[in-house]
Length: 181
Length: 181
Image (tube, rainbow over all chains, first blue to last red; front, side):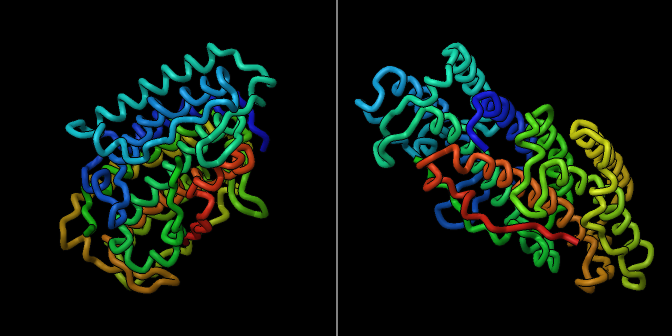
């Protein structure tokens, strides 16, 4: 479907509560295990979502509105959560994510964006020209890609425990990994 | 990891609230669109989860405890929600799923299962011999595979709207489809 700002905001409003409902106070065997190698845990993902709230979505939206294509976005640090989440609990991160998202959505709504604003163009350091509409759609899609990732990584903790049923569980066939920059 | 009943119950307790937080009152463009062809919508998935609560998990667990391998499970009807969800709203389905899950978990806890109970064996009509432990692990994994599916199907509604960012969003590369029976 076409990008619709109301639909994007409706989704962005809900995903912090969905992560919270799924992960808060869940045993650490679900939340602190990854998919092997240097893949992420649910704890890492929530830290990554927090970093996006701080440095990616709204800062880039404001850069587009202020400077258009004349200033490229700051590259997004996909590993920032390794520093920034240190010493914090998952519950603290979930709370921080919800608070920052709420503040960012307040700020987004206060911009009173019109259709012509959504068509304004900015410059991504690797992807080139992008529109404000594409940036905001990606904000929502990025939540979904990480919910997709978390449900897969949690599932994989049980891929042996389910025994013969593994033949029927489609999530096992997902090799997708988000690498949003 | 090994199957741990406490971890399974912790997850089963949370997933209805996670689906509710994500989907309740969300615009229908997110919840009533599928991935093309005869694939499912989020509405279909919640109906399917309800049917599992009614006819799959606890009925099969009790069959194992009562009859062991001597009676095969009833085959699971993967299309039952097409009849059973008719005329209902997604909000009604989300409420029904949460209520049934809560009742089933009360019943599961009342069984006071010991380790030797978890090793008891039953008979799946297609997969053959399975254990109670595998059945209960699959109950939890099944929630995760459908959360995985819903986040992918929702993401796909925006696969054009994100423009050049689609190159970075791993969910696009997921071709997995659950077909639990």
